[in-house]
Image (cartoon, rainbow, N blue to C red):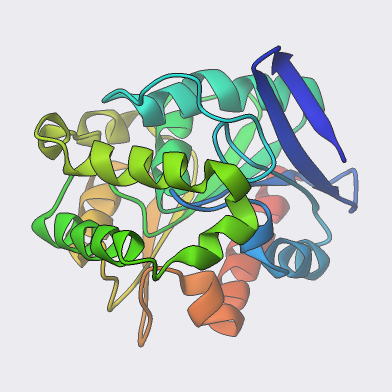
Amino acid sequence: MPILTLSPDHELYYELIAGDPARPVLVFLHEGLGSCAMWRDFPARLCQATGCRGLLYDRLGYGLSSPLTAPRQLHYLHDYALRELPAVLERLIPQQEHIVIGHSDGGSIALIHASQQPAYLRAIIIEAAHVFVEAVTLAGIRTANAAFDAGKLRALAKYHGDKTQTIFKAWSETWLSHGFQFWNIEYLLASITCPALVMQGSADQYGSAAQVDAIVATALHAVPAMIEQCGHTPHQEQPQAVLELMRVFLEGRIAAIR
């Protein structure tokens, strides 16, 4: 099992997908309750469609990686974006051009990462990212929290094992805390200069089109893509449509690099 050791209590499970070394690496960042396994076969299909290599990993606290060692703080997404992600890139794909693809929490992490204008970042693709907290977001999390407490989300244990309770409550309790209601990263969007494809399902139960509108209005080269008849997980609910949208976007970015 491939493990990247960042410190004694910070070991990350990762997967690499083969592809053309002349093309950028696609770096996949999972959702707030996700893992490598929960992407299913989508990363492999996208890499095959584009010829790109791929990198995906379980963030600290998730999947096959080390458990959380401290309570989450308000800026936990910044910690993943500004500390963990750069360390992963430096160790696994040093000085290599890459494109980050993030879903939900992973999308917000991608935005924070891109705002730092990393030297080798060429573009980002985000699905269902948040840049501020909405009432619909909190309502969706309360519903998920009630379902978890009622034992209806037992399938998560397949992916997170004995970390399931800890990681679920870290997610739900952080977002439902009083302080997090005021969390907002719109201020950093103007610093994102790379191309961005901003995707969201039209029936997303955790966010409205206002999230997409805010990103596209401020980030310099962001284009929107609303997916009809789709909820919070476009790459699973509308895989063919999402695969094609990403493929076309990526081919344009790869052509521009050459």
